[in-house]
Length: 459
Ligand code: BGP
Image (cartoon, rainbow, N blue to C red; front, side):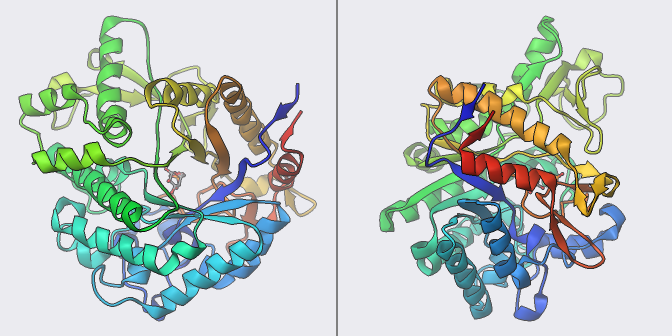
C-alpha cells in the first residue's frame, strides 16, 4: 500500500534551545534552571553532562540548517531561550541573542524551511526561579512581557508560534516527581504551577492575537491512557490518571474549561490552587490556531489495589500507577513501550473531542542507547528508527484518511541532542553526533526520511 501525505504537509524535526544551543554564557546568556541544576545537582544527570555540552546549534546553526536542507525539511521547530534573550527574565534584552535568533531565522527562511518557534521549553530563567518560578503569580506577567518581546523582535520571520512545550512537565516533573529542579514533591504546588502556566499561555495568545496576524498554538503531550484490564478498579484508575494528566490541561486549553470532576477531587482533598473567576474567564476566552502533539509512549494504568509498595503524599483514592505492562513491545533503552496505534487514537480524540482542530505531530521518536554498535561503513544503520517512524506514520495516515486535520510530522530530533537528566545516554537524531569530535554524520533514517519527504510518503 502507498501512504501518500498532502502536498503542503510539514515535514521536519524538533529540538529546544537548552538541548541544542550550548550554554555560551560568554555571550551574556543568563542562567536558567538547567544551567544551574546540571552543575549544582550534577549527580542527578547521566554521566554528569551539563548544558554546556549540547550539539552546538548556537555556533553551528548555518551548517545545521544546511543539513536540514540536505534532508529536504520544509519546517523545523526550536525554542527561544528566555534567559538568553533576557538574562534575568525581566530586564535588559541581550542584543547578542537578538542577533543570533534573527540570523538563525533568516537562514531558515532563505532555505525554505519554515520556523516553528516555541517560547518555553522547561527553561525558567534562574533569576525568576529564585522568586518562585511559575509558582509565583507575578511570573505570569514576566512571561507575558517576554512573549511580547519575542513577537516584536521576530514575528516577521516566524511561521508559527507556540507558547509552551508540554506544560504538564514543569509541574509534574518539577513539583511532584522530584525529577526536574526545584525537586519538590507537593501536589498542591504542582497544581498551582500548572494553573499559572495555563494563564501565562492565555496571556501570550491574547497579546499575540491583538497585535499580529500569524498563527499561535501550544505543544502538548497528549498521552493516551489505557487501563490494564476491564476490571472496574483498573477502569476507575485509568479515569483518574486521564483526569489528572490529560484532561486537566487539554480541556482548559482546548475547551476553555477545567473538567468539573477535577475541582471536586482537588477540593475534597484540600489540594485546590487559588483560581479566580477572572482566571476562568481568561481560559474560556482563549483560543489557539494550531496544536502540536508530542507522542512517545502510551500510559498503561493499574489501580491502587494492585500496587505493591504504596508510598506518597496523596489520598489513597488518587493512587494509580503509570507502569510498564508486561509482554508489551518495548524500547528497552528508554524503558518505555512502543505503541504506534496510539497515533491513531490521539488523532481520533482530537477529531471527536476537541473540535477537529488543526494539529501536527510536534515530537515522535525513539531514543537508543549504544547506537555506535550499529555503525557500518561510517553510518548508523538505524533500521529500528525507520520502522518506528514508518509505523507511526501509517497509523497517522489512517486517521487522516478518516478526516483528522493533521498538518505535519516533526521527528525528535534532528541531531542527537542533550536530554533532560539522561544527557546523551539515548540518541534520537537523524544525524549522529560524535561527542569527542563534535562531528555530525547522517544516519540511515535521515536519508530514508528525505525520500519520504520528496515522495510525499512511502510504500
Ligand atoms: C519530550 C521533550 C523533549 C525531549 C523528548 C525525549 O518530552 O519535549 O525535550 O527531551 O521528550 O525524551 P528524553 O529526552 O527524556 O528521552
